[in-house]
Image 1 (tube, rainbow, N blue to C red):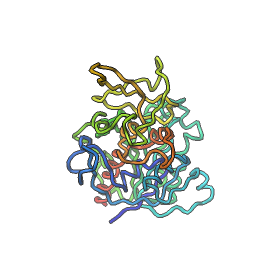
Image 2: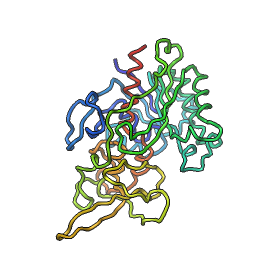
Image 3: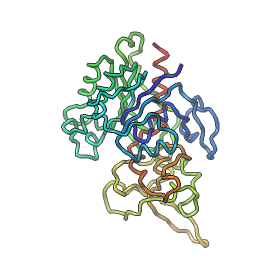
Image 4: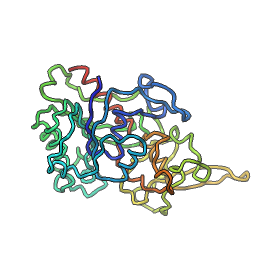
Length: 345
């Protein structure tokens, strides 16, 4: 059986890739049980497909939709504010699952933390309304761990609002580096199941188990050529922003480390990659900021995905949708848990 997924706040489709596309990650990231076959890139593998198909996607970021379209990840992708669709009584398709990463800026530790006091911070309510209208068996929402530390406890209000439309709701803090993702990215996964379907579920039905494996940045970068010698357009472009003495984005990314959290609003201050190499027998130290491709790989986007406009001069426009994305590997692990739940009904 194939389950239908309606995706909200879809971005470039990172969560949707995990549910309904062919996920391509480094072998060091996953347990053997998930692997289907070898991928063309050295060390990378395709994961077993899961029985989901995406029937609707929605976002307001044009560059994110473009990336989804270039890669064949766009499925009935509507570029419009979700609040406008609700006001227009948009006819959403039937779906077994509703997913989405509602805007996180007002809950993030790096933002102004306006929380539920901002219009953007209450966009989750549109998510609740879509769930109320579609009535999926399961919904999955993703957001930053700041939800758990905000004054006023917004996570409890969010759980209550979803519960009030007929769902048992639980949440889990995910530390991505513990799940095979080469990045110190902490996220909250909120999951809800229709109340009448919960009779036979265990108490910890929402818990996504950790991978046995962890994976560092070096595994994902090993196959790359430097910007001056590569034929990959996304590997040729990187921010030329000068090194600052302090602030976000000034960290050097070591190959034997987990990457930093990829941010959407870095304003050019995306982290540095430091490369030691030799020239004419002399040891030298080269330094530059992360390329668009490297940022994508830290997010576990496929190593061969298209991140710059085909046929046009490569730009850095993809940094923002990459930073906003749910890592596809995290999406896959979430989807695998959702599939396990359907087996219990």
